[in-house]
Image 1 (tube, rainbow, N blue to C red):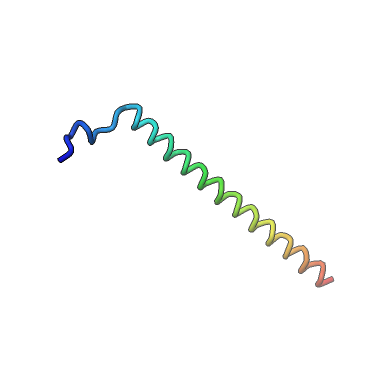
Image 2: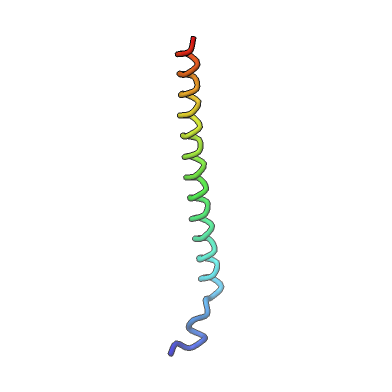
Length: 55
């Protein structure tokens, strides 16, 4: 059985885990933002093409 002391994270380990989690969350948010912007751009181009074709 692992002792309780060995299972407890040090302050540095907790800080590293927190920074890692924040980095992963920031990367995921940036990816979502990029995908949303790409989708909006595609839709904008489709609307422009549709309005040009209707004229």
